[in-house]
Length: 126
Image 1: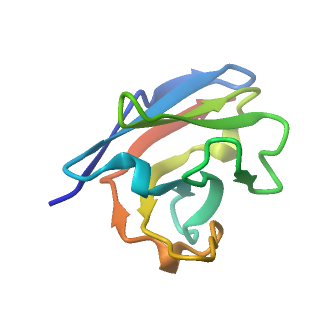
Image 2 (image 1 turned 90 degrees about the vertical axis):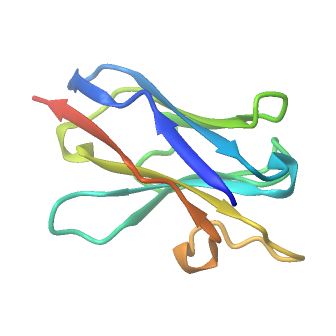
């Protein structure tokens, strides 16, 4: 059984930084591509960032490019999302996801992910 456990969320002010983490339990982390999605009230879940099995292969949503950084630590079975210059409209529940992709990596398609965390609240006040 695979568990994805997010941590590090909370309340910050606009312009602040926050790092959230996702620990993967129960499966070889190295086999997973990892992604972050977010969902605000009344909106669809949207892609934020992803990292392939190779840590130097990353993808970002257009709205977060240049401000957010995804990274993975295979020794700790953990993926991180460093978020800088946060905006109030980025208030959402942030979800970690794991993808056992084969040949082709499709990071922006949430339907391809095999495992999901419970989500963690990030609130950005204005």
